[in-house]
Image 1 (cartoon, rainbow, N blue to C red):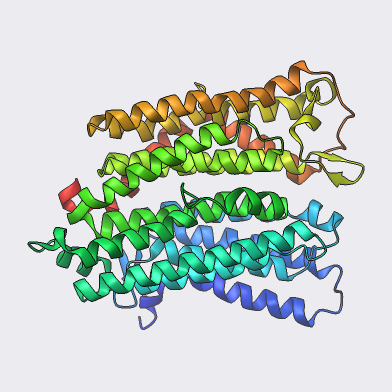
Image 2: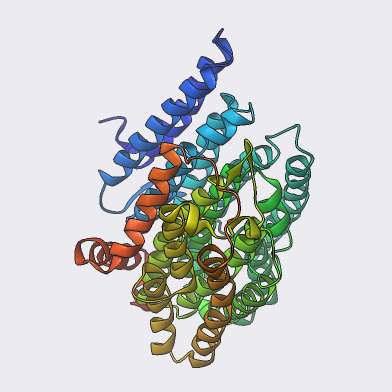
Length: 486
C-alpha cells in the first residue's frame, strides 16, 4: 500500500493529530471551565491508543530514509514513556482543579512533549535526535512555568529554559563536529565512519562526542550537569515534576543508549570513560546531597540524580546484558517515581499541598494505608530486597561486574547503602514520631496510582511480572545492539 511507509510512525502520528484536534476543541469550546477536564480525559485516551499502536508493531522498521527506527528497544521505551505520561495526566486532575489551572492547554502540551519523546526514542539520526529533543524541551519549559501565579513555578521554568538552551547549543556544536569528521548524520553511517583506521584518535570526533554526551547528561540530570534539577523539581507543579522525573527521564536515557550503542560502538573505549565518570559522580552526589534535605521534592530530585548513576552502571558494561539492565532499571524507576509523587500529591492540609518531610510525622497513626504504601516505595528506592528496587540495581550492576568494572560496582553498592539513610529516615518519621494533624482524604485517582505502583513493586518477584519484564527488556536490548557487542 502507498501509506505503508507511515506504519512505523503510527503512534507518533496519533499523538500529533491528537494534540492538534484537542487544541481545536479547547480553543473553540465555550465552556472554558469544564473543557480542561474533558480535554485531559481525551488526552489520556490518545496516550492509551498510542500505547496500543506501539505494542501492535513488531520487527525492525525504518522511516524517513532511516532517520527514524521502530525496533524492540524503541517499542519497550515508548511503552514506558507513554505509561508514565498517562499516569502523570491522571495525577493532574485533583491538584490542578484545586489550583484552578486545569486548562486545556496542559494536556495538549503533554501530548506534544510525548511526541517529542517518542521521536527521541526512535531517533536514528542526529537531526531526528535534535528535532525530538527540542519538541520535548519546548513543551517542558512551558509546563514547568504553567502555574503563572506561583513565583516558584515561574522561576523553575526560567531556570530550565536558560540551562536547556545552553545544553541544546552544546548538542548542536557536538553534532556538527561529528558530521564534519564522519560526513554523515545517520547513526549507522557514523558508526561505519568511526570504525575506520585512526578515527579513534581523531580529535574532532572526540570533542564532538564529549559535547553531545554533555548535552545528554544535562537532560538526564547526571552530575556535574545536574544543577537545574533540585530547583526545577521543587518549583514546578508536582504533576509536572512527576512527568519530568518519569517520562522525560526515559526518553533522555533512550537517547544516551541510541547515541552510544548505535552511533559509536566502534570507539566504545572513549565514551565508556565518560559514562563511568558520570555514573560515579551521580551516585556519590545523589547519596550525600539528599541527606540534609527537608523538602521531599528536593530529596527526590537528588534521589533521581543517584538513580541515573545506577542506571548508567549497566550502560558502562557496553554489552547486551548491560543494555537490558538499563531498560529494567528504567521500568522499575518509572513505577517507583509515579507512586512516590502520587504520595506527595496526597500530602494535603487545609486545601493546600505540604512538602516538608516533617509533615509526615506519625502518618502511620492517622492513615496506616498511606504510610504503608509510601514505606514500600521508600524501601524500594533504597534497594532493599525483595522489592523491585533491589532487582533494578541487581540487573544494572551484574553486567558491570561481568565486564570487569569492579570498582564501579563497589562504588554503586556503597552509594546505595549511604543513600538508604534518607529513605529510611522518612519511614522512621512516619512510623515512630509523634502524630501530626492528619492529611485530607486522598482522592480516588491518586490513591489508585499509589496502590498500583506499590503492588507492582512488591509483586516484581513473581515470574509473570518480573520474569516477563526481564524477558522483554533482554529481547529489546538485543534488537538494538550491533553484532560486534553481542
